[in-house]
Length: 127
Image (cartoon, rainbow, N blue to C red; front, side, top):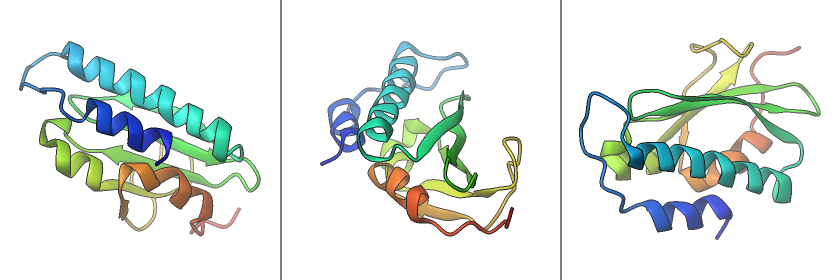
C-alpha cells in the first residue's frame, strides 16, 4: 500500500457537504493529498515533479512533469463529493505544455496508481 492509498483510506470518510465556498474538509483533503503525492514522488518516483497543483470547486487538477524526457501529464480528480468516483476514476492525459487542458487521449486510473502510470506512460507529443 503506497502513501496515497493509505492517506485516502484515512480521509475517505470525510463528509463533503455541498457548499458554494470551499469547505474545511476539502481544504484538508487537497493539502494532505498534495503532501502525500510529494512524499511518494520523493520516495518512489524521483523522476517526477508536481509542476502545477490547482483546487477548484470540489475538484483537484494539475500537471506532473517527468524530468528525464520533459513529458507533461495533466490530471483531474473530479468532484470529491462523489468520493468513490473521484478516487477510483482519476483522469490523466499527455499535455503539450502546463496550460494544455485538452491534450492527448483521456486515460483513467485509481488515485493510488496515478504516479506509477505517469512514470511509465508513453508520451503522445514528441519533443
